[in-house]
Image 1 (cartoon, helix red, strand yellow):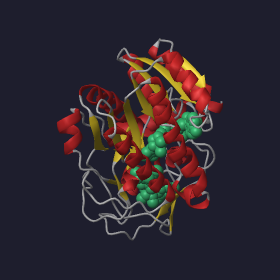
Image 2 (cartoon, rainbow, N blue to C red):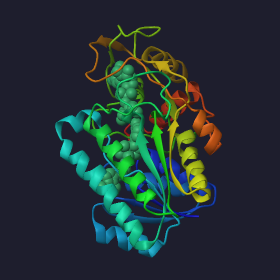
Image 3 (cartoon, rainbow, N blue to C red):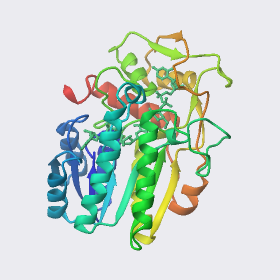
Image 4 (spheres, rainbow, N blue to C red):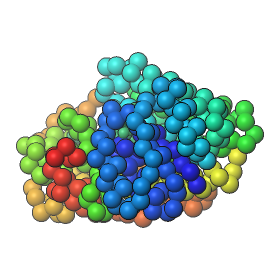
Length: 337
Ligand code: NAD
Ligand code: UFG
């Protein structure tokens, strides 16, 4: 299959690009490198031992996008490109609506122009917002509590309407829980710019000595050890969920939404302990107040993905922490070194 990957140089995109190349797909990565480096793609090429098309461009630049798609003639699109920091989305909401919503609109218009009718979209569990019951299944009410989550929900709805208007179109919306970890080689991984927002990259930067200590945001939640619990999904399992999504889209018309997680929550303290074990390094931490907007625990209902995508997570929390550590230890400064 010929797969056009927006944002394919980023964290999840690069791991997905690698898995698609390995399973014999032809790919074109389209990325503006606003949060990624060409080095990630050079490493994907080396690991896959296969070349692929790379285009530097923005999804909002209609002519560039249509030009790249016309040249490549994709059978399907995987759409990762976007911005993703919850805190920043409160401070600069228009950036999120512009990049994520307008960008996705431009992408669907470009797909119409070149006659491509299959899309797999990176949504987020953040579209659920306030918890009514756990685990979140795909029928859980949607109530995102930040502009980032609102932008993801808007795009889901735009894609649903786009799909409903086209009898041949198919769309797979993947609501990721907490992506973490790295490729088993340790050659590609998550390389946040500036201070990491997320637990695992922050903690591995502490373990490698780039930062003095981790702050644990709250230990008075209603959870087993009082710290926040999340459903961490290994980035390679997540990449494979995209392959399963492409396969599903090629066999079904219409729009389907799937949770992508493990169904198993882990606390902040459990992550710290697992990382200390795999790295053999201490991870100093200090207790800090709860982070605004955080909830105590959330995790995925994963039955629908198992039943319809024939996909489930295979890698556990030790594999997540071990691979995250291998990547950090081999690349203490990320790709920039
Ligand atoms: P990332 O920032 O590493 O990857 C996004 C990529 O898109 C980057 O390479 C960036 O340069 C590119 N990009 C951004 N805006 C663009 C534009 N206008 N045109 C072209 N390229 C553009 O992020 P990631 O963690 O790999 O996330 C990928 C997708 O998954 C995002 O849509 C994100 O919202 C979603 N998601 C991520 C998480 C997570 O925790 N990482 C959780 C849920 C959903
Ligand atoms: N945490 C700390 N210290 C840190 C960072 C995080 O204690 O330095 C805690 C948080 O309070 C939370 C847990 O670690 O309890 C996980 O936090 P992350 O920031 O890693 O992940 P979130 O669950 O807050 O957010 C992630 C993505 C969002 C997405 C959301 C729902 O980053 O983009 O999952 O899918 F919206």
